[in-house]
Image (cartoon, rainbow, N blue to C red; front, side, top):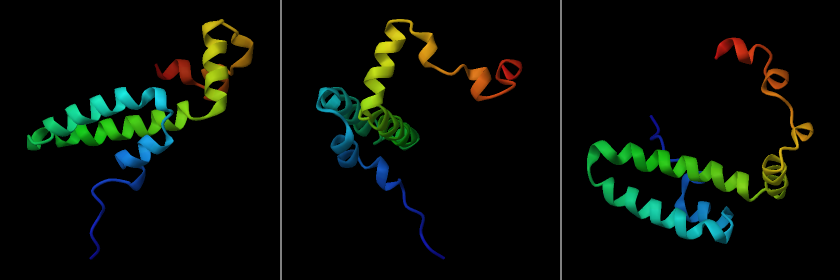
Length: 96
């Protein structure tokens, strides 16, 4: 029997910081330290894991050069640059 890792390597805070653009570091570290302090309570450990997962996904998104362009398109309401949820996932509206 092999042991399962407690977290994915991608959820390593150092790896998140490496990928995350610098402008997000302060916010990430503040939220991470708060969650880490709270994780001393056993029932709150899962919150730390969830925070790392969300920040890993956020880091992947904001570090992609296309993200800033897409974000600007959303601000400018340029809908022609996006695919609708219904087109991407047929039946989406019916599932809501």
